[in-house]
Image (cartoon, rainbow, N blue to C red):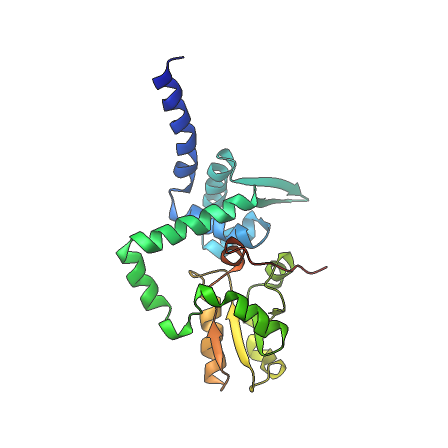
Length: 221
């Protein structure tokens, strides 16, 4: 095989990853699977897709070895093939945020600047949570929290937050996080908490961003 043919083959193989990821809904499915293993039905509900279309997208991701599947009773479960896939998603999103003005404008409308915590504050946040100076709440579904969460974080799913406000002291800072910058759950949680008189802040990180920054995760034992 000639050198040019070899080079073409190499680039074609790498392009398989780009082709598989070159769809907004597939990227959303990757982000959902960064949280934990999920069934096709759960992914379809979270991504607001039909089951058939979700299955088709997952087939493309599986063909590029970005996700794996397994049978469990009558359900098919999907998970990321490797933690590197989550890192790929974070790097791709961060590059897009840096290079695309339209995305920057959309994010500015989506998340007000005062609600953000700068990345350099991660270690300080960890220290405050460890010392009980701030309460970190994970507002994702319980199963995602159990798969992995920020150290010292409490599980308070958004759908339960209104009923569980009495568990949160008003004199302490509350920091809410969810699946990452594109997720609205923490934003909605902060809005509710502030309305009820809490000092609440949204952490831009999800577990994937936290890990990509070299920070530790905890899991339910």
